[in-house]
Length: 328
Image 1 (cartoon, helix red, strand yellow):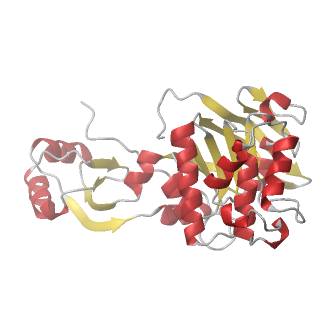
Image 2: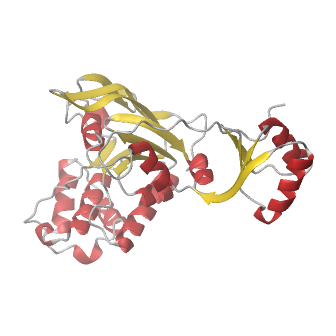
Image 3: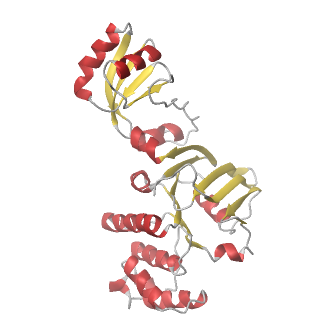
């Protein structure tokens, strides 16, 4: 599912904060997730992702602010909410001496579920069939993740909260989990909130991405903006963006471009017409100071926002003003 403007909000945090003494693990976090969306919560190690998820699940008490899921303020006794939420934390737990099937059957009993075919459905969804008689303690890390996800899905939750769900999986396993989460969102309407540091997976999965750095949410990006941001583009630096916009639209019939701050025009298609665009702009009285082909990936953007590969704090860059064509 791709988000719409009228999507019902099912996960909301307001001023969510957690301090451990002088350490500010999460600071004034405000985010919202719509029903059926896949929300990718992206950040470097130590950014505050796991602390946020633990507060969401009432495993850690906030220093300030609150979490609301499905209209319920999240507290340890929020039974009605937990009946509709499935979760997998970073270090997935299981009964090591029990087989995969026994783990699932025990979880079903703990949840008070009667229909055994639900277990079979989960086994199929999570591709656990060949491991049913193997003790959970003998599983690889990746397969323990599959088992944990299966246990989280047994009661058919409306919301699924996952902390590093592809941890330990090989590329084939990662692709399988990705397709499963897409299916859960698109076909069953399950809202998925997942934290990860794997940018490529988030980019393929998420309807919306939140980037957290040093405990603060520094940017949220919608799917359409991500799609645009990760495209190859031709960029002109011009003297007059309004005149350039008019020339590109009226003379060239071009609409697949955005106007950026600092007098930039970024074009996303028809690159073979670069000379034509250059000529039309000049004839319209627009001075061109540079022209370049480039591509900015999510990884490039993430590194810029979070200060690169070192641990020095970097302030987020000013984001471009994105608009289609010229306001008339």
